[in-house]
Image (cartoon, rainbow, N blue to C red; front, side):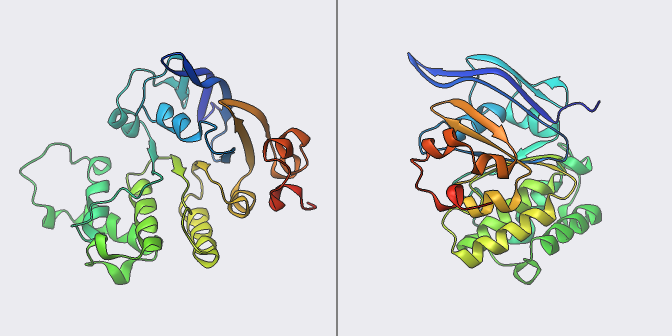
Length: 255
């Protein structure tokens, strides 16, 4: 039996007397594409912050590939193979597309704090960055400052940065937020391609994206998971429909 890529057990997060995450249990298999959905304020981004150590947990455990990561710093968790993106695009605006990606690949290639290496001479870093750049469709924008890319291109670049380190557990926080329908379709194709063979966990509001990508879906409501199942089962789950007030067409249309 394979070890879970990610396992949460009894996970809780309090802010003073207010409990935001209330005993979340979740197990995600290696290679699974898993979506976490829920109404605004359900605690989805907080859950991601706990998993990636941007916030300390109040109680419970988090295991990454069978190893506890409680108490580790974000960069330490990243080096153990988990990488994440954010709701708000998080890139180096003054660096080029290529330079953003090259920064992301350095540690995974063994270039720790080696001040004696000249970046221009690191052939493996250049090749890896260029390969990711090709994967995300930004080769033609190689030398363009990231800050002047279109919004959709910046989101694609952030996904590229997220995968460039070689992490095999990828967390994407609302990767298609703010995109048009056509941009979302392109983003789904990109995510499917670049996460092939990896474990993907995503928070997403666009139900078309969720049902188009996810192998399983967990529904988070007021800090608790009320259902985890296949997309077809989630679509027909009465409790899930009630949580969304029964008004979202993607949840009530025939499967």
